[in-house]
Image 1 (cartoon, each protein chain N blue to C red):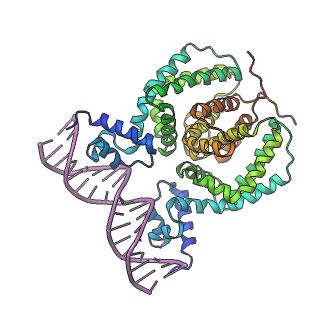
Image 2: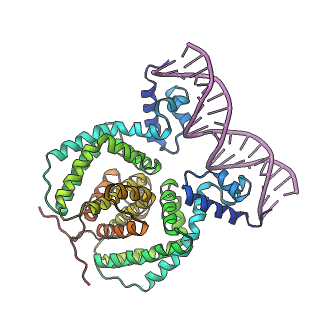
Image 3: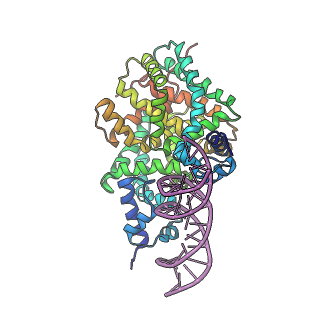
Amino acid sequence: MSKHTKARIIEAAENLFAEQGYGQTSMREITARANVNLASVNYHFGSKKNLIQAVLKRYFDVMMPQIDEALEVLVPSVGRRGVDQVLQSLMAPLINLNAVRPNGTEMFVQLLGKGYTESQGHLRTFIMSSYGATVHKLLAMLRTALPAVPADELFWRLHFAIGSFVFSMASSQALKDIAKADYQQDIDIADVIAHLVPFVAQGISGECYQIED
Amino acid sequence: MSKHTKARIIEAAENLFAEQGYGQTSMREITARANVNLASVNYHFGSKKNLIQAVLKRYFDVMMPQIDEALEVLVPSVGRRGVDQVLQSLMAPLINLNAVRPNGTEMFVQLLGKGYTESQGHLRTFIMSSYGATVHKLLAMLRTALPAVPADELFWRLHFAIGSFVFSMASSQALKDIAKADYQQDIDIADVIAHLVPFVAQGISGECYQIED
DNA sequence: GTCTATACATGGATAGAC
DNA sequence: GTCTATCCATGTATAGAC
């Protein structure tokens, strides 16, 4: 039985994660739906955390080349405008994940948020080792847009930006619920991202305003 | 044996969390060090997640009144400067947590980061129900500083800001390691916060720069 | 009201079958 | 090279002792 145990696990896991979230999905559920032995996950992926990485990889492998391509043709302006351009070039590839599967973008960002905060930095290592070239291309673009910002300061700002993003994604369901309850707004992931980009761009761009004293 | 089982659990948990983190600390370790039965945690706190909340409460109860007091005397300017003032008034109470116990600030923010992302929004509910008045005072100050920003837009920006903060705190150890390895900088929590405040203030303050086109 | 003993399902790991 | 049976430590729950 089972030609492609690995693939069936990923498919089952992805569906279950999408339905009920990462933390709420047990490995027994996954292996039961995939019709494989419980220990198969450990054998093929090493752990549940690695499984989430494998699920994410399918999305990264679609998104990252698109980002790479978008950055390739980009010649950013200097300043906030340039930062906006760089961030905007990430948006289309991200939204395009809806083509991978229904609600793909939302699923991806939710898994990313959970995985990032729950996996003690393993996801960061994975991203850098697998897509480091694209990440560095992105960094170079930001440096072009912000020649006045020192490298270490840019390092800080980038991590803060990633924090805004990951946190928003991980708690996007809560954000949607609150927006509906408190502001009568029905929003989706694209809305969240649309609000997020200016915020992050503003923070990264830094001193366009001098504090007088 | 044991007059104050609850207090002993909190003390043991706090020390162990500080030593080795939340996720790496088992309830069996906690109850062993506290010399209480394993099930005591469940009886007194309901779950491990609730225990982290109880530990955090001790810090919130010190910090929140200080914040409240600082906000009471504050008359913020309008614009980025005002936002800076509001955020600055949060910093001293936060750093003061080092007086609660050695390394108190770091421990608090780490637990806050972990707890926030791992507890499915329960921490947010807890904060709002226990310290809602102070939070709303903070919000009112920000609205004073940013009269042009609509309430729903401010809502978004605040959540993004919280995201930067919580994420940075949750991964502050990783940030410190990276800063040391890549930029030969020894940093502590106060440094992280010092870098974070301008970033967040910038993002919250929004359009001080018009995108031309 | 507190606390204990104990049971249970979970994520993780491994030795060995095939 | 795959997969299974099985073991371990964990968080959680509960029945009942005191």
